[in-house]
Length: 232
Image (cartoon, rainbow, N blue to C red; front, side, top):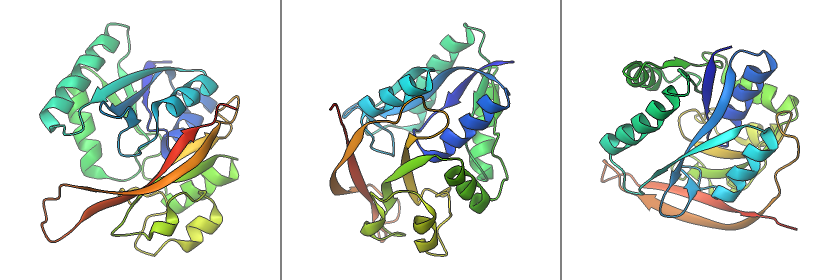
């Protein structure tokens, strides 16, 4: 099997993707690769604390590579930082990068192009599967996850902090993808067949944050449910 890295967000799509990779012995996953906000040590876009990410990696049993990025980060700096990390991994004989992406063609092309420059191949085990089928598959396999952030323009505040289950799926508006593939929502997986033990956490405050938007008439706002490591 090819030595590889799994791009790990801590959410449901990367968890289901890793499940199939491990179950079918598709690749030799050496590391989970995660980007974090350097100012608050939280997973990028998801807002999950680093301590819970560490719990995930320990329970899965795969080492983690962390990439710390500034809160106000340019695409150029992102690409330079990732290139440095991947170059180090290449020296370890790793040349495959796995993603849980499902259908965003532009994003896939971008990943493939950037990785090819470094001698890496991008792999997408979930590619072009029906997202409704993926959602039900994830739930039926016994994975459990909580919604940690939502796009406030697409979903009501009440959706954040909910468990990702069939009830959640039934309540989603028709214009929201079942897997949140367009960035409508993000999740944190805390149990399932790839974990030796459930991740221990409790829910904290629900907070609203806005980010700079290219469209001055549209708010770029998100609701977050803070998760706190439960050490008891």
